[in-house]
Image 1 (cartoon, helix red, strand yellow):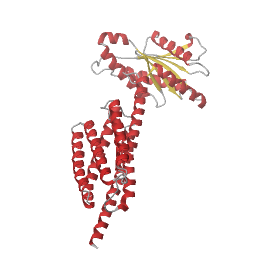
Image 2 (cartoon, rainbow, N blue to C red; image 1 turned 90 degrees about the vertical axis):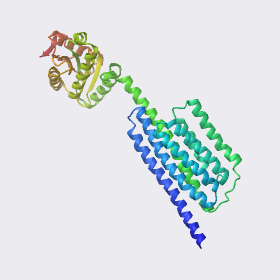
Image 3 (cartoon, rainbow, N blue to C red; image 1 turned 60 degrees about the vertical axis):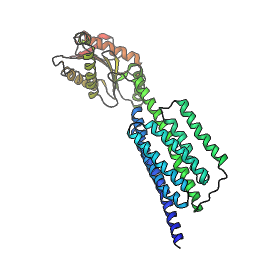
Image 4 (spheres, rainbow, N blue to C red; image 1 turned 180 degrees about the vertical axis):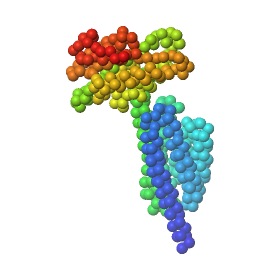
Length: 396
C-alpha cells in the first residue's frame, strides 16, 4: 500500500515536472514572439541582445528541469543518470555565469556539449523510447545562430550532432526501458519532442527576423541621406511617382517645391563644413515640423531640398511654404552662431494633369532661380504649366 502511494506520488511529480516544462515552453514562445516583435524594426545589435536574452531564459529553465530530474532518476533507480544530471546542473549554472560575464558564445557551446553528453547517456541507459535524442536536433539549429563561429565550423558541429542522432539509433535502438512506470513513456516522449522542437522554431524565426532587419537597414541606407536622414534623390523619384499615381486616382492636388538655403556656400567658406552640416540638420528639422505625414521631403543635392505637398493645391501650398520660410528666417540655425541669419528661397508649382515629373521639376527649379534673382528669402509660384518663366509671381 505504501509502495503504491509512493508510486502514485512519483507519477504525480513526473506529470507535474513535464507539465511545468510544457508551460515554461509556452511562456518561452510568448516571450520570443514579444521580443522579436520589439526587435523587428531594430538594428542587428538589438536583435543579438534579444537572442541572448532568450538564451538566458532558456538556460535558467533547463537548469531547473535538470535539478528536478535528479530525485526522479534516483527514485527509479537510475543512479548514473541522477549523477549525470548533477553535472548537467553544474554545466548550465556555469553557462549562466559565462553569459553574465559577456561570454555568451562560449556559454552556448557549453550548453550544446551538455545536451550532447546528456542525450547519449540517457539513450544508452533508458533507450530511445523517451525521446531525449531529439534535443540533438535542437542544438544543431542553435549552433547555426552562434555568429562567433564561422559558417563552416558551425555547419560541421551541427552535422556532428545530426550524425550522433543517427548513430544512437544504430547502437541503442534495442536498449529496453527496464525501470518503473513504463506507462509514462509515451507522455515523456511526446513532451520531449515538443520541448526540443520549440528552440528550432525559435532559431529559424530569429534568422528570419535578422534577414528582414538586414533588408530594412540596407533599404534605409540606400534610400536615405546619411546627414539629414531625408530621402535621397534617387529613391525619392520612385516615391514621388507612386504618390502622384495615388493622387490621380483620388483626384487630389499635389504641389512640388524646390528649396535652397541662401548663401550656403559663403556660410561653409566662412564657418566651415561642420557648422554647415549642423545648419543643414537644423533646417531639415524645421522643414519636417511643417510637413504632414503624407508629404515627402528630399535632400535633392547640397543645400537644395525638394518637397512634395500631398493633397495640397497651389493656394494652400503657398500658405504652408510661406509660413515655413518665415519660420526659418527667425530660426537660430546654429547655437554657437546666434548672430547668423539663415534664409531659404522656394519655387512652387501645382502638379498639372498629365505632366511628367521631369517637366514639373524643371518648372519648380526655374521658379527657385527666379526667387534667387528676386533677392532671395522669397517664394515664387508657377501659375500654370503652359506659361513661360516670365509668367511667374514672386511672393516676398
